[in-house]
Image 1 (cartoon, rainbow over the protein chains, first blue to last red):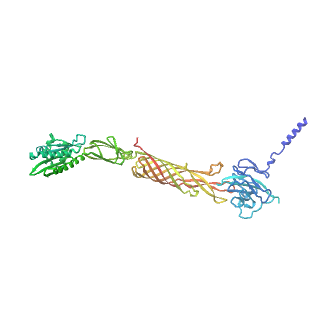
Image 2: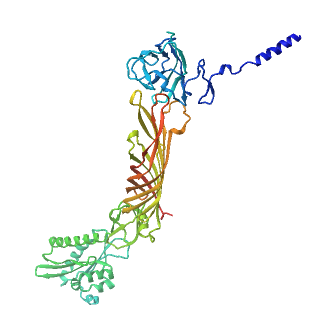
Image 3: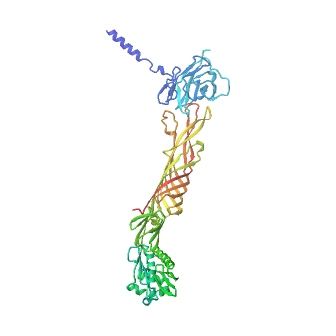
Amino acid sequence: MGGFYFLLISLFLFLSCGDSDESYREVETVSMDGMLVPRDDYTQLQNQIFYGTIQIDLEITPKSNIPSFAWRTIGSRFMVLAVFEDKIDLEGKTITNPKDVVWTWHSGIGKGREGNVSFSDGVDVRNGEIANSTAVTSLEANSIYYVAIWGYDDAYNLMYSSKEYKYQTSLR
Amino acid sequence: MNFNRLASLIPLIVLAHVSLANESQSVSIYNAPFTVSSRQLTYLSKSIISAINNQFLSFPEIKIYSAEGEIENTFQDPNQILFLDKVQLLQIRRRMGFDGFVAGSLEQDGAKILVKLHLVDFSSGKIYFNGQFEGKFGAGLLESIEKHVSAFANTLIHYYDSTITITSEPSGADVFVNRTLVGQTPIKSLGVADGTLKIRISKDGYTSYQKEVRVLRGQRTYVHGHMYDEIAEHLLNKTSKWKLDSMNFSIGTCMQVQNWGQINVETGNVGNFRYTSKFNRWELGLEVSSAVGSSWRANQKFETFLGNDSSINEFEISFSRLSFVGQFNLVEKLNQFDLYLGAQLGCASVHSSQYNLGWYDLGDNSIEGRDVNAVLGGEIGARFYLGVDLKLSTFIGGNFAGNMSYKHKTASYWGEAIYSSKSLSSDHMYFGVALTYSYWSLRK
């Protein structure tokens, strides 16, 4: 009986000595809602990038340097799809790190169609500006990118957005 | 004039007598024996008198009287009567009440008969006929006499018809004679009984015209009633220039024009309510204008990644204004037309708000613009009277009204659109119409 109590006490002490912050060891940032949002490499945001909007579920060709993107068509005239080389930073409903964007597609480009976009339908982005070059640069192999899509109604009110997708390109 | 001298001369008198004291409109004939130069003519004279009487008696209005008493003395000498002037003849009528006088004599000249006939109209103061008939006694002679007597009787009868003609300004007024409605002006030659008539002419919105008219038998009386309307009467009799004339309540609508082309504003109408007090040629009061119920829509086109003007920022603009108003009547034609010059001083609240925010609430009221500005303006207008109480006004004017701010929308590629404050001048021109009800202070 005494051995049983010793075993319980030992188990309690063992569990109490663990590092409680082990899974949140990375830098914490404060979201616009004032909540602590973990931002380590293995964390993926589960909500839309823009609060108060209708969610779009995005499907991406897995592990490709020239991925294709698909989502349920919503009929918006204004849709924007972007690939970031770093996590998406927001202030309110505005993306504050457009310089991290390497590729984008929007409804006005004239290629692809809303709901189904190939990588070649988009354009390169350099320093937050859409590049004029016609050729599209493939994503770097064996890299992590972050992908999101958002859209507007006819009056250009922000109405749709996806969550931030963490994307792994091909190994080679 | 000594009428007693005539009494000894009259040989034959037939009096046409109209009794003015009597209310009935009858003409009476007095018949006396025909004076003749010889007895042989007596029967002939009776025949002539009988023929004359028959003519008179063919008119039911005529009664024949014989000479007696004062009548006989007054008209003793028909020859003297023939020399009286008009005034004297009229005096005889007023004194004796006779309107006609018939006299004659009968003489014989050999085989011929000479008949002198005198027909005197006292009513008009003239000798109607003074002549003689000569010839053999017979149907031809009597017919000639009867023809003149008949015409004379007709003249007397119609002369004594009493009529009254009534007109008014304005026309179309009700006419009451002795409290009995007889029609509307103009009334021409209305047959009335002689005597005193109480005439009243009345029309809505005008002061009644009342007059007692003495109508004599046979007179044609003319009555014209010039009626002032109540308002004109009030204004003309007003003792103080600054005494309140009227309280005016106007409701109207107008269109505003301002330089808001860059936001493609669809200008709607502006409702306004205005109260003014009228003092002499001045009107002072308050005005409330509003475009809340029918707000104006505007849209600002902006560039997106789809190109220029590829999206529209729609919003509504509404305003309300409170002003002191003063107006001066440059031209004032009572109850017809006013031309006025006006000024306004007050404040206006202008509000713009987004119209197409989508289905969700941004929870941010910063996309509204609101300004409160001083307003200074001028106006010129005209009022057309639609009667005593109602006026229709048309006006045109302009206001300095400060600025109207709105939120200018700009597309952002990396998130939601950006709203920034911009302002446009609210100075504007306007024109419109209003209907005014006037409550005049004389109506207590």
